[in-house]
Length: 148
Image (cartoon, rainbow, N blue to C red; front, side):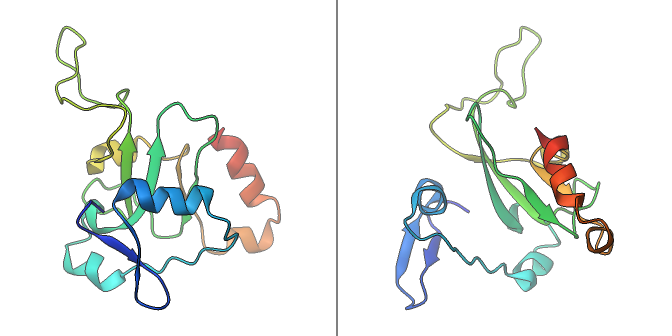
């Protein structure tokens, strides 16, 4: 997701464009129910590349955070259904002096690599074993506790 992509409403009008506008709708909208449909074929045609997956916006140092539950999460940096868009500086690669190798600010989002996305598991991303939550009514609650 980038500034060249848009979120479209039910009437095929542009509802938001770019990371900040989409995230604003998700977090600040008066609408309490938001439906987002992924494009599996786009992801498959992209070789299951993480950047083509379902978007998750992570903002460093917020008081709360989103948790992405999906049954198609893998421990493979080349095969991720989640496209993490990250705003912050903590996850930037560092040189030997501890300085950021990438010039990034806390105001812009960047797409994380597959390896970086793996670091998000059990904090922002949780693989759902398809049947287990059916038999364990507390499964999702327990996973939220793990992600704290």
